[in-house]
Every structure is written in C-alpha cells, then in structure tokens.
Length: 243
Image (cartoon, rainbow, N blue to C red; front, side, top):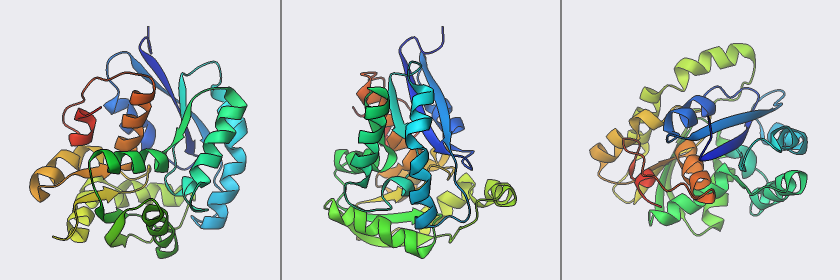
C-alpha cells in the first residue's frame, strides 16, 4: 500500500515540473506524494503570483480526504505579499480541509533556523523584483542576506517550460550557488520549487564547507516532521539528516 506511513499533499503552480519528481525522489519508504495544481497565468510577476493564490482553496479541497498534510509548494507565491502572507495561505488551506498545512517559505525559515544560518547567500531563478521581496521577507524573519543573484526568469508559457528544463537544471543551480557564495555567509539558500537542486546539495556542502538549503528539500523536511516520520534521508544535504 502506497503512503502507509504518510501521504503528503502539495499545491504546485501549473507550470511547475520539478517539485513532484524531487519530492518523490526524497520520499522515504511508505511515504507518498499527491499534488494539485494552481493556475499561473502570464509572466512570473508578483501580481500574477498573488492572483494564483485565489486557486488555493479549490486546489486544497481536491486533496482533502486523500492526504495527511498539505504544503503550498511555491516559494515566491508564499512570500510575495511580505511578512505573514505564508500564514494567511496556511489558514486558507486549513479552513478548506481541516488538515495541518505549511508553505515552502514557512519551511525554509524553519530550516534556516534549524541549521543555525543567520547570514545567507541566496541563489534563485527569479527576476530582481521578486528577489528583493524575498530578501525583505527573510530579513523580517531575522536573517541577513549577504549576497543574492537571480536568473531573471519571467515566462510561464509552454515554450518557457521547455526552456526551463535546461535553464533550471541541477548543474545551473550548482554553478549559481558557487557564484553567490561569499566567505561572509554562514550558508546558501537556493530558492524556487521549480529549480532542480536536490542532486547537487550534498556536493555543494562538501565543496563550500557550509550548509545548503533548497526549497524542495526544506518543504519535504518540514512535512515529514509534521507527520512524525523522522527517518534520516542520506545524500541530499545535511538538513534531511536532522529532525
């Protein structure tokens, strides 16, 4: 039986092709992943990300009765309106389903605190305006963003998704994380659930000699804690060895 230990639900943007495969790859034996999609229309902008949240209740209701916990699986979509926007989204999900819920940005904040990171280098695929909003969100939670760099990706069309399969590859995440690294930072945060990262996290930690957190890794870590599945997951960064 699939999901005999836990069934994890994720709400993902309609253009996202990365989060489900990465979470399935990370899932311990007996844990299953189930997704519903949030329609993202137009370019990758704060306005459209906010519009996407109107899909939250309907998408969450599709998972009601199927899963044990639900995560809003979009980093930028869960910080785009600033402090407490993630908690508002959590409240919407919980109201619609009576299930425990989280968001990726909520999970990232908890993961950064768990690994004792205070000064962060941040790598993202986002445009500058979204990077600035994320910087403000993290700094409002007490972190200092020492350096940040984005890939300035804005499109959400079918063509863009095809381009993203190459542009958002794990090798790009690896190179971008090394570029943004600085001796002043305690660790690296690679943002976006649509950015392939998990296969390079351990290599980055070895090469940079500091913790590396990614959006999908942090989301899985937090959901597993919420359902009390405390099995260390090897090979995908130090965070998943700790509970």
